[in-house]
Amino acid sequence: MPEGQVRVVECAGKSLALSHIDGEYYAIDNRCTHDNGPLGEGSIKNGRIICPRHGAAFDAKTGKVLSLPAVRSVAGYRVIVDGDDVLVECDSGVVPQ
Image (cartoon, rainbow, N blue to C red):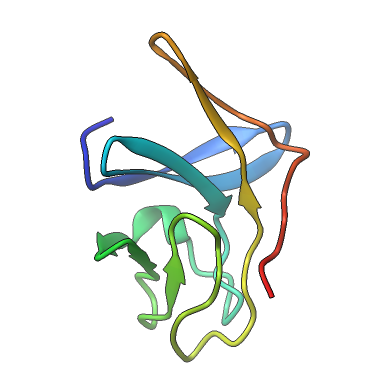
C-alpha cells in the first residue's frame, strides 16, 4: 500500500480504515460517527483521515475525532508488520477520550 493512502479492509467481520503514514500502518473503525461515512474511502491530510461525505476529521493513528460535524471518536487498533504481511489485532480496539 503506497505511503499517504487509506483503504478499507475487513478484519474478523469489522470494517476498518487502514492507513500508511510515515512508514507506519494504522487502523481505525471505518465508519464516521457523524453519519456512518466510509472513512477508508476518504483522504489523508497531515495525519488526519477526512471523511468523504461531510469532511469530519479523525486522527489516523488513534481514531480521535478532530473536527465537526463528528463529535465522537472511533476505535483504533494495533497493527503489526511481519515481513510483507500487515496484521491488525481486531479485538484490541480502543476509543480515545
